[in-house]
Length: 467
Image (cartoon, rainbow, N blue to C red; front, side):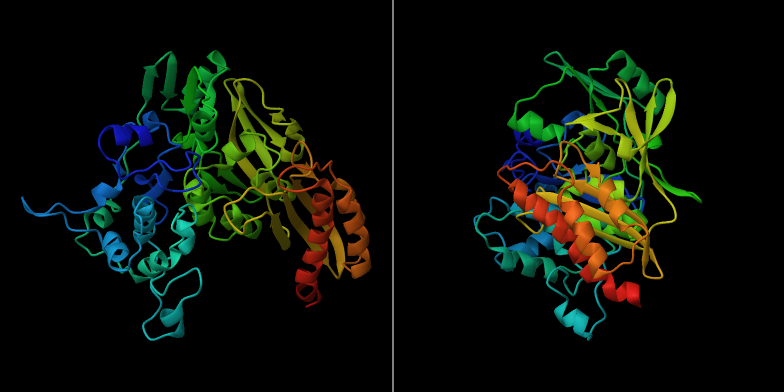
């Protein structure tokens, strides 16, 4: 999409990192809304295949301004105005991307200011302004001048959209429907089908096809490693992969729902997932990335597998012959390998109910946000009467695949939730997996962090369990 825009003179959209980490390429796309029919969603134009936006609405930084009378300059958008008057533009290279990400937050339907005169309204907090602006919406945007203070000031100064604002009004109508697309160039074909059944038939005929949803992984391969595929099949708008259902004994999450959509639809109902989302890449990536994609790549350092392993999740796998349900603990078979057969894709993730009351996700990385984990540990415990009745622990970054920590679970279950039990189990946890040394961490550090994470959980939960 980035190349498409720039080739047409819309050069506000910039290329910086070409892997979705800097946000210079941010644009707005009309997508199905959570609280309104349409949400304006910021995405990385450097990762999105342009054919996947066939028939869709895209707003660049140039499109935010309102055209004036002939011979007069356009009227700046409120976000652009605040960035200008507060000195947030600096060199200006990253500004269009910041502006688009800020505009997405500006139009977020549930953003609301604190009550006038309250302490919250006067001060907000470090990451939320008195106007309800969430700075995490800019977590995928980098300023090369390190001038974040005036950008933050601009974000915290924007008001509410007016009733006459055309982009605010646009949220009240449904977004464009997905369009069945077949586009070929240079011996490569992009396909989007209307239904899951049609898509699965294509995958049966073309088992070599690359399946993309948000393209946050494949887009990096295209840009950085010059990877090309003979056939790309888009599944991100298939209705059958975009449902979220709560049944009596499980929650089913469609594999093509974006992480942002899941986060906002669940609204904290699965606390372990709620703890995961802010630590998963950036808002820009979460606006496109999916659970199906994160699991489908089979990466041993993906952030969602440890959490889903602790939740005892299962995957609904579908092909042209039907569906089967596979426990996630049995899904991974080797480095970036799984039990998924050719022509088969992940339709949904199922999380069994009821949920364990004691949960935590510990991500050890060099940066607080928007980083790849060195080690990731997820816990889900049932503790009754001071005794661990059930323990589920998911690990990432310590083996060729994400793994369940079965030995540590056994060391905890049936034992009192005490310092002695936890210290003994922590020694077991340090020996789980086969951690290796690389540029992110040494094997000894990874092992140490495993044990430390359980000690941290105990320190965090002792008071809650005893009360």
